[in-house]
Image (cartoon, rainbow, N blue to C red; front, side, top):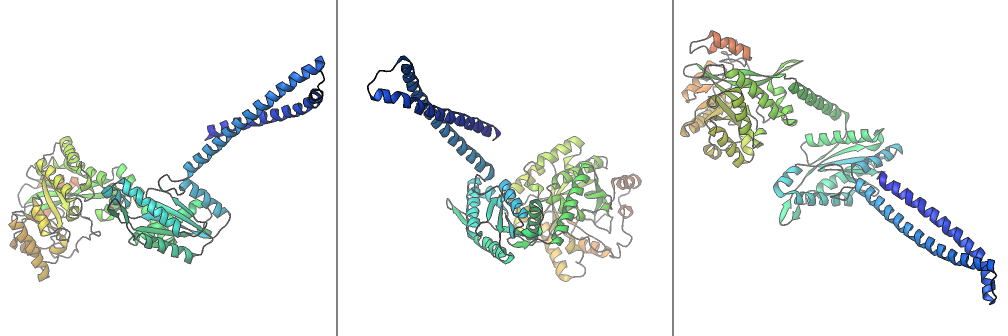
Length: 539
């Protein structure tokens, strides 16, 4: 752009000089003509000096013609550069796909509106799950949907509004000189318009949107207005999406807390503050420890935190993978020194099962640590079955081909059907603790546990019970044929050092009672660990 302006300045200067020279030649033409033309018109003969004037007169005509031609060429070149500059400005400030203004131009208009103390509202629209549309139908359909949304926005926005596309699936509308009720009506109209699907090449693409609204007059800068609208958009998404929300200070405080959590988590991961703790897995018949499940713990400035307090942050930030592999690597390094009869179990998040390289990454860690694949049990939750089923089965098969066993964790929470379980190549079913805790108090729950046990027996798949907290529950589980269990009755999750000391001191088969057993577990006085939504929080 700077080079373009420099050339334009040079052309303009040349145009001015040429124009001035041409005007001077015209004035000279008039002066010479007043002397030469009267004599030529009367047929008289010019003296020698007048002959020189005649030659000068003719040359002057040539200079005028040349100057006129040169000035015309320079004018055309200037017009071309003006057009190029206009095009460059338009390209620099508009979105190439939708034709709307881009973020740069929006921020300029917003800054002018704030400086002029205009009233109005900034609307931010984010298309819900737009990536799925690109993945499912391709980017051509995605781009057509973006153009359709742009057309709907411009048709709904009040006059003199600035409509812009400011991100991949994010739009903005600055509505000036409108009331909050008018802005809210526009937001409702936008959401209503998105209910109409877009048809492209016999494909119907559906998209909903979340909208954040922020009043213009409450902000002292364009950046603050954008932040307020972002906070409102976060509020709309938290409310379930496909709705709008106004900015409020409480939501801003919650968002600030959320961002601090994410920053703390990233820093802790970089500093190696996450460590594995190990909870024993017990053979219900012999009471012998048959292995340990690795659970993530955070050595934070607030003390030792359990997974319930940070797994959601890990998944939200996309760092669940690095966290899992950090815990897995530390666990493998520790467990390779255990007796060879002890297995290691670790849970894999549904988010990670989307990664086609999962089996390869785990195999790499096994090679690096020298831990036998046959002693590693990978636990997958029922939530993993909601993803691409073919990919899930392919990943499970790859893990099993490497020698690992697969356990279906938290079974009974409602995700997996019996038909799905029958076709999965799993080696163990883990019954969710929400059933185990109440099976001796509720006939209905006991019947559910019995049904799950019957399923396992019919599939010839052994069962593990989670959350066993009393001898009464242990006996009930033995009766339905459950082979393994874990819970506060047998021992809480402890550090690697504690496991090391425990293994060095206990050589007999029945030594589970000495490993971190909660003193009141036999009386079933401790409530079950709380789940976080639908996530697996027991890590």
